Amino acid sequence: MKKFGHFLRTTLVGGILFLVPIVVLIIVLSKALAIAHKLVDPIAARLPFESLIGLRTPHVLAITLLLIFCFVAGLFARTALAKRSVNWLESAVLSNVPGYQFIKSMGESLLGVEDEPVPQVVLARIEDAWQIAFLVERLEDGHLAVFVPGAPNPQSGSVYLMTEDRIKPAGIPPAAALKCLTRLGAGSSALLREAQNLGTTHTTKVH
Figure: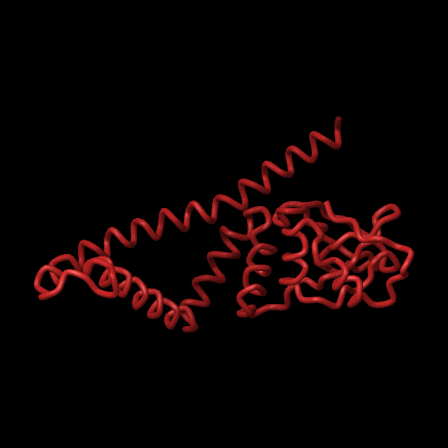
């Protein structure tokens, strides 16, 4: 019963963490598109055509304006001022959000834009099974802080302090590990082939 309660709680929290960014993104984009429409509608009304590439002219102009704004914002994000502002926001606010740093690192890895080293993918031996995990930190006493994500939602999981003999490097990028987790273990054979010195008598457990 306790295991079921833990599973239910972590699954609900993981679902919330998964849905919140998507919902926020949809709300922000819809609001931004509405503002863009207000800006371009007077221009579209003066144009001699009502549609472009199969879409109404106001829609095309609004989307184009948003893309230009995103591009300019991306250029600004590369400046030292923007980086200092983001670093301050992360240290003062976002670092207190559970799982933010891990989600950020994984997102940057998936996009190929990571600025900092992402957690190394490892196989962690828990009881008599190997589990896909991420090496988060090496402690001064020799223990390793390891995050073992859940499946199919890897944004929630458990943290273990383990000795190094219970860890094996997986030899795959984080994106491949996340893909395996979200697919409930499909593709584990490729992961096992890459794992270094992994005995053939062990199995990989994903949950």
